[in-house]
Structures are given as C-alpha cells and as structure tokens.
Image (tube, rainbow, N blue to C red; front, side):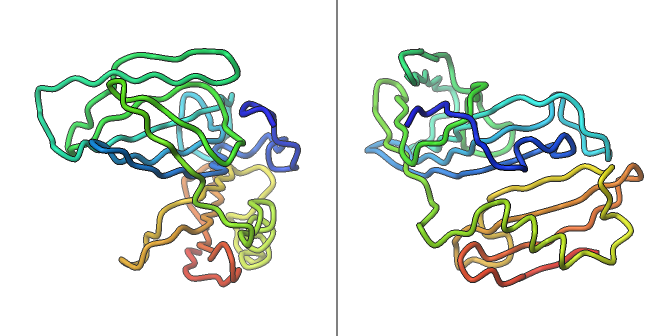
Length: 200
C-alpha cells in the first residue's frame, strides 16, 4: 500500500473536522529518539469553532541523546519516490527538534534520516485499537446532551500520548468546539473503549 493513500472513512470527508490525527509513530537510533504524527488539519490552524481549509501533515519530533544547543541537524525523508529534506527546527523551550512535510502516512512503518542516521519509526497502534470513527461515535454518544455538540462546530480527533498519568500508552481524544471556543471532549482508551476523562 502506498504511504500516501487517502483514507476512505467518513471522518476524512467531514468538512467540520479541523484536525484528524490518525497515527503516531515512535523509534530510535544510536543518537536519536523520535516521535511522529500524521493526518490532516486546518491551515492556518485556529481553534475558533469554524473549520477552514485543510492540509495533510507528517510531523516528526527528534530528541538527540546528547544535546548540543548550537548543533544543526539535517533531515531526509523519501516516500513513493519523492524526496523531502531540510534542516530541523529547534523547539524554543525543550531539547528537541522537528520537521513537518505536507503528506499523510497510512503505512505502519516509515523511516527518516537525521544527519545521515536512519531512524525506523513504527506505529504505536495494535490490531486491537478501535478506529478513529469508532472513537468519534463513542464521544458523540457520551456528549449527546452537550450544547457544544453541533454539526456546525469544529471537530478534533487525535491519537495522543497518555495525558492522564505516567503509565504511558496512547488514547483517542475527541473534541467539539463551538464559535465561543467552548469545548466538550472525551478521552477514550483505544483498546478497551473505556472513557477515561470527560470535559463538558
């Protein structure tokens, strides 16, 4: 399957979805660890209750195992015969670097080169993960009585690292935002489908 194959689910066609983060990848090499995320999102990005134009994205965050504040790192990514390369951008507060390209990855594995060193990235999802569509339906059912839940409002569906505690893992985060920037959201375990946190 091509790494750039488009998704065919209903969420990818929903004009009110402002961010659809479908997968997270992690990996490491001798000198770096990395995490990447992919999907599509509004551009320019604004959490304001109104969903605008969208753009595919693949964002890679790299952490050197030995941090040098004046060091610059180059990256290279090759997909379907197309090459992307450039210089990593330093995070203003953390000891990490990143780059982003306007593509959406649907393969379970992808590799990037940082300063010529290859990092193999693998999806964190297992075969037991529910789909983002299922997470969206669970969230809609749980938030059925919320005034923020409206077909006119912005929708965010993200696979995110555990924001609750230090036990690790990933969760589906589904949020609805109205024009007043009021948010209703649900955090869902991707395998058990348990709702672990709610904002109403």
